[in-house]
Image 1 (tube, rainbow, N blue to C red):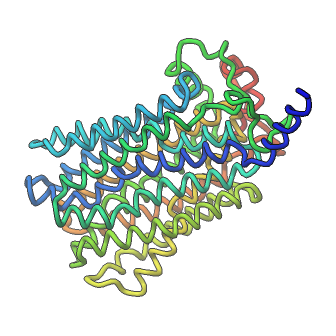
Image 2 (image 1 turned 90 degrees about the vertical axis):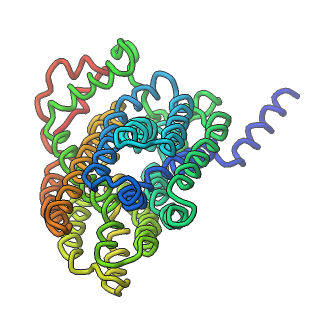
Image 3 (image 1 turned 60 degrees about the horizontal axis):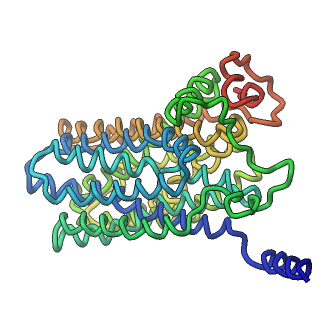
Length: 453
């Protein structure tokens, strides 16, 4: 009797969708919820400039601090997720986003913008940035891993951009303070969903990762080798990875990726279009279109990452992006021309298509430490974005236009394409690995066999 009931329960469980899909769904909602505030810099630059008299360079400094912390928090958040669990880290991160967004309505000085918009929101969004995507897919998926990575990545990036028309409309109507409060409420509303439905690992609910076998089950980092806490482990993984050429090629390329997307287009496209007479709501709508096409491009990129050499994909993505940025200055006008729409579609397909192949390479080269390594690579992405955000703002203040920023970003993308092609293929590659110091082998047990460059 007991045996039959057990067999019936097993059959029913097999008929239900795997729990991994619920976890991925909750992660998607959390990422989109946090993305709301990441969408606001572009629509708030002009209102803040008009109300407080701050220069674009000053406002861009707050954006820069946000972007740096957004990136540098990521590797420590990945290690904290190993130590404390995804649910706790993501819930606290959403609370920080809500707090930082809400407090901006009380600011009267530019340093307060840096503290709220830069520090609090930067720490919150950084704690659930793309390392969260890498952690979820590493733990819960073996089959469909690339596609899920693409969907979650696209959700976050598209969430930032699709929020823009609404936020721009609110900022022009009720005001930018109302827009900030709406974002704070949206992030706060996601916290209960994360707390009650997100689970850290399949083993916590008696399951294995979707598609896992005895040979392919995701490996846990060795806790004995990572003593000293999450921060210490993150630093040790960085020290290990930094001894390989591939890490620097990945980090350098991703820094340029951040400079050419979040730092430049994400922050300055709307004010640049406004400089040419285009209404901010129209420019925000164009960025929203980038977000829509980004969904298709990133999911397709995730599918390709399971089938095509990720290095080739990265080289193609960066090369095409650079070419598009070189022609962008000639496309701005007071009205939306067909040529600008073509750019928006093309750039949208490429916006964060770089993420799935980069995650795949980190996973292949660095094994169980891949999520933390990707956290550091993503940190370079945000450092590049921060530098570009400030540099473009200062360029506009001194030259009166953004042309030099667009041309410089296009040239850097060509360099990123070259670096991407120099990255190791990872596990199973025929290329000879670099000699790895003994310190690498001591961190995570067997990392020396994984670290190739």
